[in-house]
Length: 91
Figure 1 (cartoon, rainbow, N blue to C red):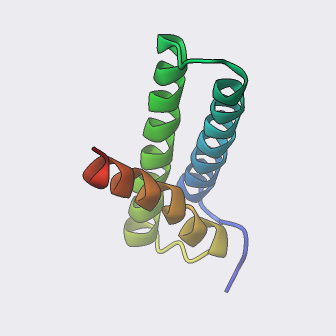
Figure 2 (figure 1 turned 180 degrees about the vertical axis):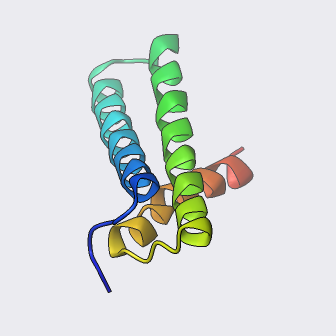
């Protein structure tokens, strides 16, 4: 099994997942520093969630259409699953 993707869509999925994780982590660190959560920070978290979900969709499409079997593409599904679980089970 290869580690790095071979298709452009596989690389796009990996980058989207990585950027969404970094943006969400930066947003979490900023919210810990502030007393409340301002509205612009909520918008940043929504963007991070959308990026994680988009990375998962790109990963699934690259696996099904282009037969991508790289380990990083499979790991890209983790942030997408976390986003879906948060949306389904959050109060």
